Image 1: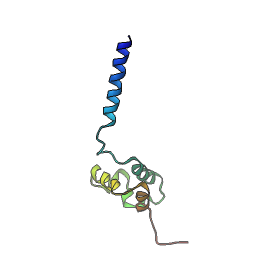
Image 2 (image 1 turned 90 degrees about the horizontal axis):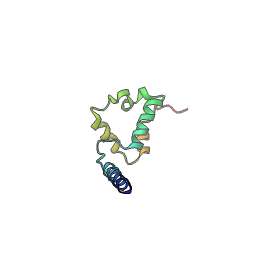
Image 3 (image 1 turned 45 degrees about the horizontal axis):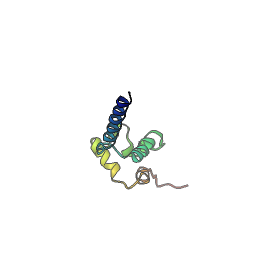
Image 4 (image 1 turned 180 degrees about the vertical axis):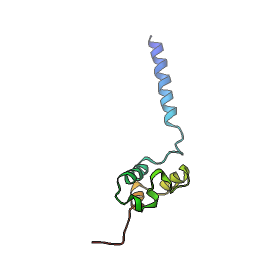
Length: 90
């Protein structure tokens, strides 16, 4: 029983280690993606910002969307790029 448990534990840990080392190139950075999705959903001026169009129609494909996100150093850069400025200040 101990031997079976040890083998099962070893195989589980091996699976976890290899799955965590999986290449994540095709996934967008999570914080930057969160900023884009939050602004796309909640931002009052979403319709005025072409990069925030629903279904990511601004980007030619998923790779273009991914490239856009990784082009910023941090999530704050994405946020600032997606802000709408009307040119009017009260």
